[in-house]
Image 1 (cartoon, helix red, strand yellow):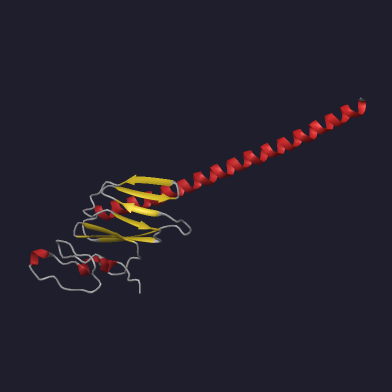
Image 2 (cartoon, helix red, strand yellow; image 1 turned 135 degrees about the vertical axis):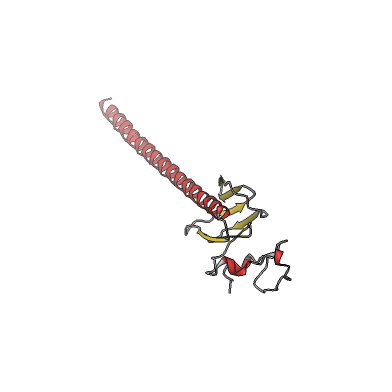
Length: 174
């Protein structure tokens, strides 16, 4: 009987060491996955906050203004800009940030943009998923009160009630 007791005690010790090791691995894995999710959520919050603060800065400016907001490399996000909110989403994570300025623009949504060009001309805001051009915003602003017929410029894709070229502030794809 003495030999069987030693074997059973040794077997119990081995099983307890294995169970302890498995528990340690599971706890460490849980901590790392939680930390990764928290970091990614923080990054999404920062992107949404940067876009909403850029929109507030552009809208608050007295004249025309252009700001380029870059999305950090490696982030695959979807960006939606609505009446008073910016929605940044990726996989199952969604972050919503609000801004205070009136955009006077329809809602837009972009899949995986690398950069956003936020343009304000004559109280109209536009956000495009392109790099901003280096032009001065006031050079392409036409005021309808002068009663001059709107000129046709090939790079202008957006026309509004006030004849303003918004697309001219973004670099072309070519």
